[in-house]
Length: 443
Image 1 (cartoon, helix red, strand yellow):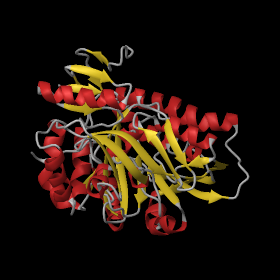
Image 2 (cartoon, helix red, strand yellow):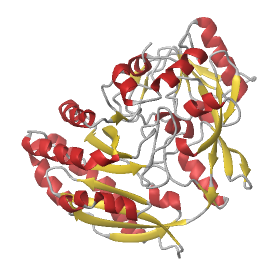
Image 3 (tube, helix red, strand yellow):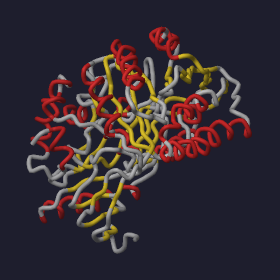
């Protein structure tokens, strides 16, 4: 439906589900505002009717952070680059813009974000509000690259925030889980377009864990994947390069990124779901399928890759010095259990940042992410993994499956009370609340 006569496009009760299919909701109505003014009016009207409001991007979160039985805001019509300030090194972008569109538009202007996650389907507001991150020794999450933002608060006001204007709101709203208002625009720090050389290399589990600190220190961006039921890993090192650009060849790139990482991986996971006993043998074969390769390209073509195989994910942020011990415990747990895990475990890092609810807030961080193929029972695996991660002081990713509550999170985040006090001030009636926020932030 399109907006007409200056009124936001609306539809009645329509079931919504997230990308993974593990979260569903039936809002009273769905609103697709074509302007910030329409968004403000939608918020005011919902408040008058006693309906709660949640904004949702592309649904790539695995939690119910965006679920509502009230008014569901779809911000995709609020999209595109609004302004570029080359002198300041910033770009302002509307909240509903997909990261893939932002990355391509920036590249066309000779600009780039410094760091990004490994997929780019999300909207910029959805990605930052849940703490999407990549891996980096010195460069942090997407939210940490925000320099200013605007959001509609519970009273329908449009609040412009930065380190100078409403700094306490800016500090928290960079990663607000949708609890403080509806973000309408974000201003990111950007830099001139650069080249990255990616070096992908298989490596044994014992070696990569023994050398983990060395790899993190020697590379701007280091990550690796461990294949459960094996001692095999695949490592990836991304570092800035003077060039020239040398992207993967059309055929070899298709083989690695589409055939092996998506097509064959889909078939392998489907087989594993049908015949779980075959998974360890499949894992040993799959973990040897990816070979070493090196290529050089612009950032988003190196950082990101297509992810067409659907899954459910849990990820915890651990103090970096605890990550290897936790990973070894995870491996030992899988080996002594009857679990059959067809998805690799992903390990990444981030430097400490100053965002109250960032998973890297105040400490150098390592992330361990566990996945299960969509439609496969995941509770036993995730429960066992979560027990290990929490024993090491882990913080769950806000957009990925976890069972933690406000009591746990208040102890895990030194600035948790700062965030909840701000929420009490900006949204005392919990217009932007839902069951998920009640669990993780309290009421």
